[in-house]
Length: 278
Image (tube, rainbow, N blue to C red):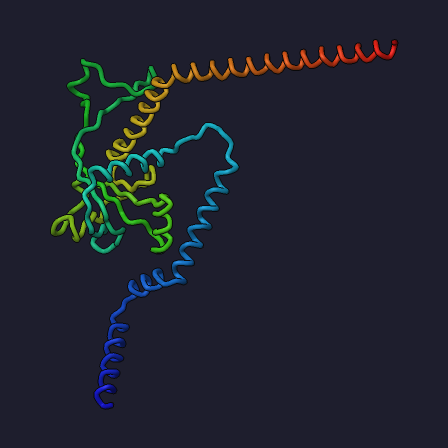
């Protein structure tokens, strides 16, 4: 009996120690994986699916304007998936102001074409050959692009991820505005305290040069849309002509049926009158 009592006491002590070691994250995971947690998650997913179906069911076919921020988000989504470096670091400002946890980053160098405003033509143009000596054609850039974890409760973020609605935060910083301590992975990226941020296209940027960099994305998007329209123009015309011809043929057939039915009805009435006369 003494041995059994000792074993029970040891097991109880181990269980109590394991319970004490369990942190908040372990408790959240335990709740999510419990039957009640699974039921709540499924109910939330069902509610969100019903909401999105109801929200989109009443929409009429119309021209949809794509916002500039949506263009940026779509471009960055594919860009970070293709060339983004997976990291786990913190982005801070002034050494203490925590901005977010970095999950992917891109270091990019290049040049941006410079367009100058012509007051006479009221549009942006490239400088003439005689002006090239005093007006540069391009500006070099050296930037770091960061994708930060989204805010919010972990369960809500998980559901949005399942629905494909998760939105990351992005920050783009010039090389001279930032410093790194010990490498990109599991390290600290510090933006100098004197750097001021602007929000442009739902992206936080540190200079007007980066603003021009993002503006090029909308120009590229417009060019792609133009090429898409040109590439589908012939097929669109053929389709519309076929639909128009189909509509004309249907109306002609309906008219012929109505005319034939009227003739048959009129003939039947005349036959009835002849029988009554007899």
